[in-house]
Image (cartoon, rainbow, N blue to C red):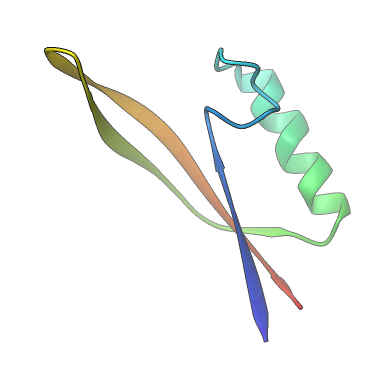
Length: 63
């Protein structure tokens, strides 16, 4: 059986501001716990009068 984890820019690792170095640290931290990245995507999030792109990383590991 597998379990999944989703990491977004709103995750505690980023403290509200996206930073590639923080993304790398988060991914390495999850890797130490046995998580493997299975996909990375962006989602268009609607906001007041416009939209913004948000990074989404999906991890998987054996349960």
